[in-house]
Length: 219
Length: 219
DNA sequence: CAATTTTGTTAGATAGATCTAACAAATTAC
DNA sequence: GTAATTTGTTAGATCTATCTAACAAAATTG
Ligand SMILES: [Mn+2]
Ligand SMILES: [Mn+2]
Ligand SMILES: [Mn+2]
Ligand SMILES: [Mn+2]
Image (tube, rainbow over all chains, first blue to last red; front, side, top):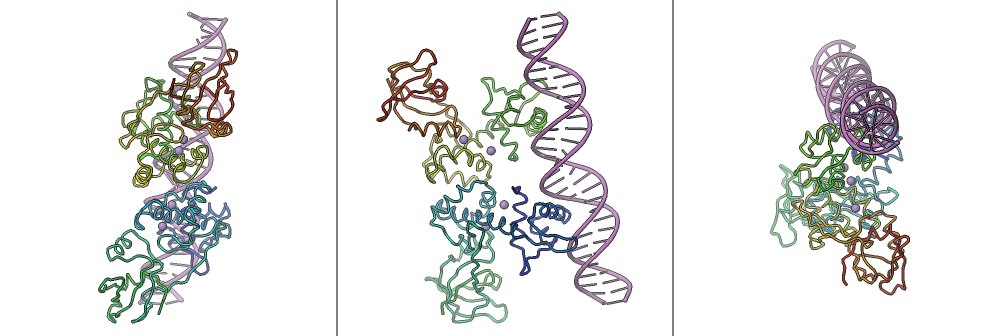
């Protein structure tokens, strides 16, 4: 069984992996907020457990078993976030820190029961897919709002960043998943967008914000 | 902040304390399933944090702050057990192991929300009192069934032991908290009791079982 | 009360997760 | 293509939580 620390490394490896599934030691060190020597020794340890493939001076890759282990922790994390929002009345900006702890609980029945009570949700409160019990993830390819054109109508479907600060910003603008946005104009100088939605007269969103909003195009 | 390990020691100290609040190193070692030297060093460490009073060759006692810390962990444990039973449909025999992990989560809002959703319950699913947010415990002095007399009518109110095996035994006899029992007879040889309750024709309970059942006398 | 048993302590070791300092390999810049 | 920078490794230390072996104090027993 993976320790809590090992579980957090597996999750980071999963999230940082590029198209080739590779992760650099330095990236992982930054993500985990530890020194590179610490990562170096942890990676050797994860290798001994069969969760990663690693050779000196080469990026790390998760093995199939490492990927599955990571996906199952992410499943627990996302089910927890959804449960906190749907069944316990938390805001989407409050749940990540709690889920970061709850994801390490070893009690399959606990998470199965959450899943069942919510009717087997496919997405977490931030629009990220919940891996199934086999660790398979249904990847959905949304577009970032910043790639859209003037006049398009889109539905806010997910986020590329779910930090508390960003979620609180979205709350302050009454932006939540499922909202229908219409792109009124795009400022060519800084790529900021003017959009309207649900009664709101019009709202200007910076490029930084638009890049973090994932949408489904309606028209 | 106490580590998970320290939290488990605090809880054990709280539960093992005698009338004078004292706990021997050997008891604690047995309870925690570790060696005496391990306890010895942990006790010195808890002392440095101000949670216990300790002198060489003397039993350990929790300080006021140690008692409060312990009670607050027990609060989280019992709220969790109650939530699992009342809001998630678990049986009272399934919840202890899960609560043993959930009790270490640092997220006051999470437990406050459980508490609120359940309407601030005073007892856990095994009849044990839930400490309040200040760590105060309302001790209730029940009687063990084994101390009762023939002819008495009692209500099953709590348990002195909540092991899965015992809870499954009680399930198999349809015994749950709140059940009204009538004592038909007591076998003088082995102190076993014959009782009736709720439709059941009559059930014989060994002394071992009767000592673990806490009741409120009706008549 | 002396002998035995139980309880508790000290010393020294180990494993996991982390650090810093020193160095080496790989990459980037000029 | 050498020099500088970045990235990664090794060595050695620390801290927590644990162990066993050896010993010492306290309690029990005859
Ligand atoms: Mn999250
Ligand atoms: Mn985590
Ligand atoms: Mn319990
Ligand atoms: Mn615990």
